[in-house]
Image (cartoon, rainbow, N blue to C red):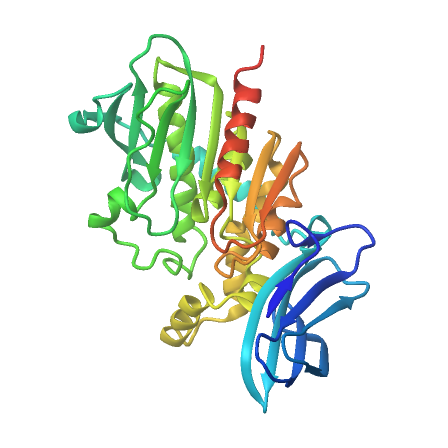
Length: 399
């Protein structure tokens, strides 16, 4: 059984219906009887339509059928295609498609004091002296960059770290600040000259900071109070990374790009929203968005929140969701003014495309997206190439 989607990125637009093609080939020397079942649900598993077709194929014959769903609403959908013989599933295909994702309706739900909260938080960060400390990493400094372990103080006087690739070439350089995925292992940034300086940040409690982590599973830390919630400090760490690169004499503070995937995608949105020093951004498969819908679509991180609720019977979902509005990137992205490109994996069930677009759709600046139809929680090389082209267009163009 082969199933094809007559749209190259599996995302339908305009007046096109959702459409798939099912092709069966009988390679036996005898007839085959069976049933094709095509089920369609929303991305949060609400059933929409099931087509069931009994069929018989002669020896070495094939079967082809088109299945159409008219007038979908903007969003993402799950297909399940089965071929059954004698009620036994012989072949099964599952995949997602999208329809008009830029029209997904996930309205801003920020509280009245949302901007005041972040203005106050940024002011508090400024009161913390960063005390930058750079330590050369000789084994990673043999090519076109000197690699440094950076240590600095952030919000709450938290010690955070990162790796900085300082170009050995003279001059004022543009910089790419990269934010890491949730629980990622530390890694060095680029070491072969390509025109950019690089800084890869480890936010509090993660990556280079994990040996002294005091935040447990991070996303559940401090859910009793927005002032103490983990991502308040973590989002401010993102800004402290920008403070660091602009403190460097070899960095041009007017030419800063940010990028990252998953949690790093969310943090790229955060950096561009909270700090106008960011001139271009390239988030991919972004996390931390549209929580109520997110928790209906994907098993995690809701499972971590379910554990928290069991351990804190006094907690109420209404209060949890209210707190999360302060850290929902769809509420922050309305402030972005720089150009950006976003990448998604259409089959992503970790940070589903729905939540990616919930944030993206609130961005009012120049923007574009790329979808990878067969990928899950990742994007292809084409996205990285396109994002670097955008960085060069923005950061190397005449000022």
